[in-house]
Image 1 (cartoon, rainbow, N blue to C red):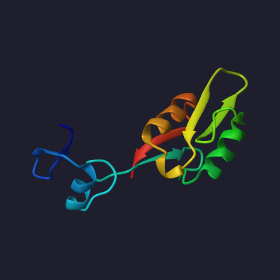
Image 2 (image 1 turned 180 degrees about the horizontal axis):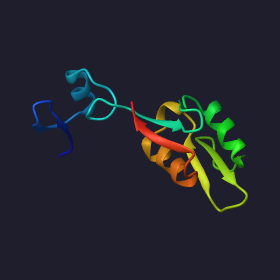
Image 3 (image 1 turned 120 degrees about the horizontal axis):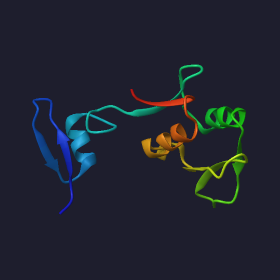
Length: 115
């Protein structure tokens, strides 16, 4: 028995068996509140919309591409630390978990916002 709890606009929660069905029914996409999360580069205020732009920012911060993670991962390593950022190769699968990982490893450079 699995499902997702969805917050209704009238203040009531309801459990839905299939999340995508609930989003279609409610006309929403993203999280249950209808918002998506985005990684924002604070220096310019721009939303990171591709791995190309993210790679450009990370390399300017001293991160280097790391090619040891396999075909499904896009990774960055910083020589001055033991940190490794691992991202799914497909940008459409870039989630808030990976966004917060980037924020933690680059304090005061990025921010995660709901858009």
